[in-house]
Structures are given as structure tokens and as C-alpha cells.
Image (cartoon, rainbow, N blue to C red; front, side, top):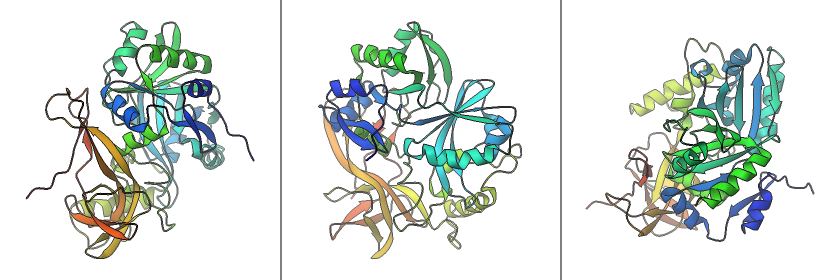
Length: 407
């Protein structure tokens, strides 16, 4: 039996009482003694720390680094400027996702590609042979640097204090190299929680241990994989292996099945040819027809990822079958019970609600506002397809979008 890998923050997690589990070959905290609900709510109201050092980090250098990345990614890398980041997808020729990723440009002469931890080896096996055809160098630097996600309404205040007030406004996908009390850090206003204010910080291993302890001493609290999943689910963010990859029947899911594809895929003339372009163009054409409610031909994009909210009492889970008018129309890809602050205008409440929400892979003609049923242990329970699960339009706090039945 192979030994699980550990991040530089492992001892901190254990000393804090973290429940350690096997996560893609890494020994990671799923939760701490306060529990997933408390960690979720603390992120939404204050500031939480997530160890994301297990994510794969690939340095891309060389004269043809831009040309190479334009070919192997779906995004228009030429649009990426110094000290900025972009969400992207690594496509295959069929228009399916090898992985989704984030591309950072902290300096003029190199890029940092961050991929999912469990997919890193598979991604490199896909990317390295292609790199041999370009004047480019790929280096796996995952073991050299740690990464901490500092997420929540107070995250900027805490990091600004450490930076001596040097941080710029937290515009989405902005990057900077800063000194945090003498420790060099690369900051990006990215994250997997849906928070309008949040950062991902890349530092050398020893510096990351210092940062974690320093922020914890300032009031930030640790959060594990459990809360990371409920937070991303509430913000409708896809997870590879659930909303990307293969569906429960074993078929490859088209990239345009995921709503974020409209931001991650570019057909810019400057981009030129890239892997999967022809297949993705067909998907885009199908997507355009579908959003205009033309369902005459959905063969290329038969199903799409949509939010789903259970109305009847129960809990939806990944893999459950969804029905519409008695016919099977798809599956739940991710689902659980999610906590939320129950407030109207001001964030001055301790009242907490819970709702069972998730994401589902559903027949493309299904629209927002329609009712469906979810098979939960042989019982078909009522659910609805809402517009979304939360809104981040009024920072610093996110507001839950709670579906309420009108009579």
C-alpha cells in the first residue's frame, strides 16, 4: 500500500484536531472539531484558511510558451497580462476536459499552471509529449511551494495588515508579488468558495507554515475539504470528476455542458488552432441554439450542468437520478445539505438556515424555474431548477438565493 503524501502544513492540521482523510493520494483535513457547518459559515462571515498545497503547480517557460499554451488550453492566453490570472480548461480532441485549471502570470517570462491534485500526473502525461513539439519547458514545482486559500469578507483586512497596507483593490483574477512582514508571497484574487473577497497565496514551504500560524493568531480559522466542497457547491462551481470528465453512465461530458465554458473557451483569431477546436465549435453552436430555446438538434450537447434545489424534505447526493414528467432526464452530480445565514438587508443575524442543494447533469431543454423529481431511496421527491444558489453582487458578504414557492 502506497504511503499518502502530506503537505508542509500537515502537522498544523493534526495539532488543530483535523480529521485526516485520503484525498487523491494526499492526507488532508476534511474538517476540524468545530465541524463543516461552522467552517462554512465562518468563511461567509469572517475569514477561513484552506490548505491547497496539494494542487499541482506546473511552471511553463521558453520562447514558445505562449504559442504552446494557446494550443493546449481553451482560453485566449494572449489576453492574459502581467499580474493577472484566468480560468481555463485542458481539452482533448473530442471536446472533453482532461482537467480544468488556473493560469497565472506573475512575471513576464513564465506562466504558472495550477491543476487539480488528483489529475496532475495525468495532465503531465498529456501535456509533456505535446511540449516536445515546441520550444517550451514544463517544470513540476508542486513540492517547492505551498499554497493557502485565504477566503472570506475579512481576508483582505488581514493580509493588508501583514503587507503594511500595500495591497491593491481585490479585483477578480488580479495577482501581485508582495512582502508579508518580510516573507515573499505571490497573491491572487482567486478561490473556490465564491467569496467576492478572497485570495490564494503561494509561498515557500517554511514561509507558508509561518503565514498559516500568523493568520490563525489574527482570528482566521482553519477549514477542511468538507467546507471547501459545500462552499464551491453553493457558488455553483464545477468539480472535476463530478461536473467534468465522465457522467454516471460512463460517457464523456462535453466542455460546454459546464456554464463556465463560456468564460473559459475562446475562438479568438489571435488564438489560432488548438486542441479540440472543431469539436468545441460544434458544442458552442449547439449551446447558442439551446440558450435561444431552439432544441431541434441537441445531439452534440444533450445535457447541461444546472443548479438544483430540493423542495421536499431530504438530502440530494451525487449519482441520484432526476425525472421530469415521469421520464429520466439526468443525474445529480454533486449535492448535500448546505447551511446559510438567514438575513434580509443587513448582515446582523445569527439565524442559520439549511437547504439541500446541488448541481445536476440534465437534459438540455430543461429550463430555470422548472420542477423535477429526484429519486431518493425509491421515493421521488420534488425539486426545482433555480437561477442560482447565491449572489456575490453586494460585497463584502455573499447572499444566499433561497428558493421560495409562491402561491
